[in-house]
Length: 392
Image (cartoon, rainbow, N blue to C red; front, side, top):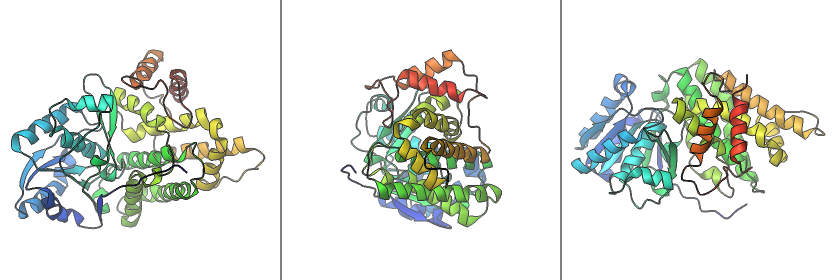
């Protein structure tokens, strides 16, 4: 186990009708608030009206900026920054899922600097301060409601990049599972894959003697698997929704990263896929993760055997560890398929030219010439994973 410091001050306000507390919670940080949200659903459901009413009852002056899309865009971030500077915004409330929250995080630090925010994403520059940020979560998936990270996509270059800082952890996150009832099955499924990916990226490490966090990750994955189909079959199952929502938050709040070094190659490989084809992040991860696993499992066979046995209860002859590992990968792939998602990229127009383009974009402005930590991937490794995922 490596040395570590764990810090996460996000206040989680969980349960029914908790969105009505938004005004009293955000007032602690300012009375001129930007409410940042996505599209039609936040308004049509009445959620946005309830949240804004909560703010106005606290005497807060509300400014609105909607229009966040999946794979949030740099252009809207710039618009938000200009609005914050013009109106002297004191705090931001993100009403939405990971894309909205990530966009809000970018605006929150961009409003306090003169430089181009994209340079921070591209070159990993450290940020020094941000506007206070609160969240009303509508899509359990990215875990951005209590994470240190944000990801945006540049409109022109279609390069997708993440940026991390403890300052990005929201001051509070309101999580009412009832707000998730109206999510389409596809969006729910993509969210389930996303949170499972955050666990998988952390689980597969070359750092040994992390049994406690191994078992916490395994328990979270098993809970996701147990509640996934009940949520898809009965979208208004409050208890299943609550389990999934809390799993997503815990998966990415940093607790399961302590004492270990995660991999994160699958995320970077997928980022170029979703930037290029504008697909949902979770859908892209379902296409990539099984193939990353098949490419790297021999680098830490014991870990893949443990994953198969503890998460999917694989019971095969211990004399054949490779078969156990491959069966675990197969069962994960079947789980993703049971959610109605593709586990390959054959539906996308990918050829060798596209594979080369996506691979090269991964390394734009990166110091390292390899990707990931479980098995450092070269360009040839990444191309091989893209090719494998693109076979019928």
